[in-house]
Image 1 (spheres, rainbow, N blue to C red):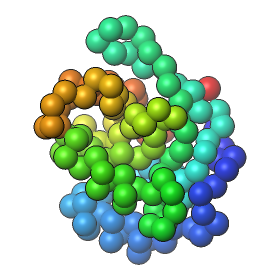
Image 2 (cartoon, rainbow, N blue to C red):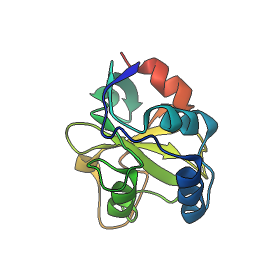
Image 3 (cartoon, helix red, strand yellow):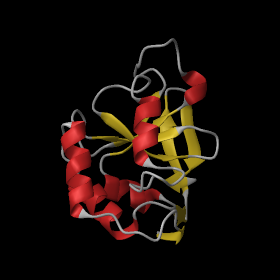
Length: 147
């Protein structure tokens, strides 16, 4: 997998990540932290992935991995604020698909695991696991699933 289109030419600094982690109250998993330091978000290729839902196998693709550059489109700060009350505590949005669904990363509970959040299955105003499917046991595994 490589990032074929960047959101910013500015690399993210360790200080920026530490401030984000401090505000979040959790450290980012090592593999994701390394990925962010190398790419700072962007459009991957390949980008497709498959996962199991309660209804059977499904698929999606990563449209954009979020950047840590706060003034850019598709930044992690805005998306964390947008989805804060719509996704369970302990998960953060790290990417989106072309339809507004979110790829989530466990930072407290289920640390390091990757999930798919389907906005069409969202029920009510409170965050729940009802519209979330497990994708990978680690961020590294998720990257290897992209095809």
